[in-house]
Amino acid sequence: IVCLHSLTKPSLTISNVPLKQGGGMGMQSYSSKRGKHSNAKFAKFIYSDTYRSALSTFDTTIVNSGDVNALAMFVADNPYCVEAVLQLSMVLFHTPNNMERGTSLLRRAMFVYESAFLGSFLKQQQQDDNEMDCFEMDISLDENTTFFTSLFRLMQIACMMGCMDSCCAFARIILSFDANVDPMGVLLVLDYYALATMNIDNTQFIIDLVESDEAIHISWNPTTEKYDDDKEEEEKGEKQQYICPLVDMPNWAYSYALALRRMSQEEIDDNDGDYLGDDVEDEDLKNKLDRQADIALQEALRKYPSVLPLLLEQNKIDTKGRSCLLDWPSILDHYNTSIAMVSPSEKFIIGIFVKRHFRLWKPDDVVSWLYRNAVIVAKENDENGIASLKKNDASTAPEESGIASATASVEDDNAMMGISKNISLSSSSSQEQHQQVAMGNKEALNRYLRCNADDFTSDTFQMLPAGANPLDPRLVVPALEANHPGMGGRRRMIQQQQVRQQQLQAGGGGMHDNDLERILMEQLGIGGDGNGGRVEIDPDSPLVEVFLRSMMPWTRVEGVPRI
Image (cartoon, rainbow, N blue to C red):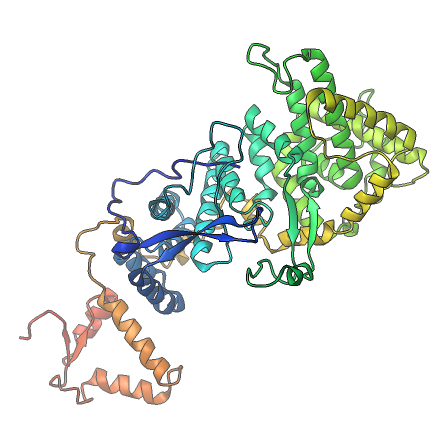
């Protein structure tokens, strides 16, 4: 879908990122049957023994302790451990006035990954029309999980900063790694990013993605989401799999219609060539796109009628007053579907769509277009004797005569313009087939219930209170400097924490009364440790603790000669 030369620009403080041979990470390619093609090319990150050792220390010592100050010191000692760097960046994002610092660490994590890329990992699209030679990635591998998370956080930060072009680029590259699985749920907002850029190329991207011969299909396996290549195909076929087309997602159904309308409003330059054919007059082309946009919007209104009242409410549009142009009270009764009748997955997606997209549907011309098509759908249901528009994926189609004429016109337009149309509105057999696919829609969309809605709708991170911030700002400065002087060795505090934890685990896990008594005796200098009755103080301990304990006559500070 998209290939980029470079994901992030390295900071001036980042240099000599270690590769796998030098104690860092690398990348390996392999073939797998679970891709979109047989023997599809996959890529995964691989860790060196040194990196795995550092990661093991991070998991056992820092993660289990929950100490953010220890995390900052660990990052200062291990500036290229991306799991720790990403964790510290998220801590900074949730503390006041640290957005820039968190972004700097996030960019460092991505630069470490980019340094490990294979030369052909982000290969540019060839000049001919052949399919792009792009790798896929499996998020279920532990080595790849943090990479997907880092890309998603970059997309999220770019949205908060209002950089919609960057959001769209990051979302597209995440989707390109595993389009049908959509591991990070970017299809929930990719259409918004593309439309919010107000760029004709991104608008055309939405249309192409929906109408492509190899269109994306949402797939979900409630049992497992990854196949074992060693199993037989028959065993894979026995697994319960739910699949639905992209336009069966509520946000994509409406965004596809809006994208078609935007393209119909664009002035086409004959000198550059019409994207749908040079021999089509501008006015005819506009009318054909208008008809396509109307049919797509009407289909979206039939599938998800509850979206209309929510959009109007979010945009604070008067739905009780009447005018000669807009008479919302006369038609809203057909769309006031109770939200309780909507499946949980559809309710979740619709909620994100309304919160993100409502501004795109606020212009007066868009509201008028929405009203005009809502009236058509309401009249169709009145003619069929339906009192209210029921929320059902396999919704009742309009009368066959009107459908046949509309479909014939659209198919004729598509034949002239070379468009592959995926919306089926005619013939009873097509309707039955659409109903069979729709029966699995709600199940296939359940894959998005695992996503956090705040990651897609919130423009800010939830901040910790200033008084409850446990992070020492003096420890953050060394962590931000990848090549900070004097940070080459391991900190004694982290080493001692690891030793204590190993001792406790060897002794049965928790700390018992005997352990507390032994520690107290060591503090009092009566433990017989061969140190002359003196106990050493770790200078990396908190300053208050070092000061108070140094006043005791039986203690000494490591590195300070005795008096």
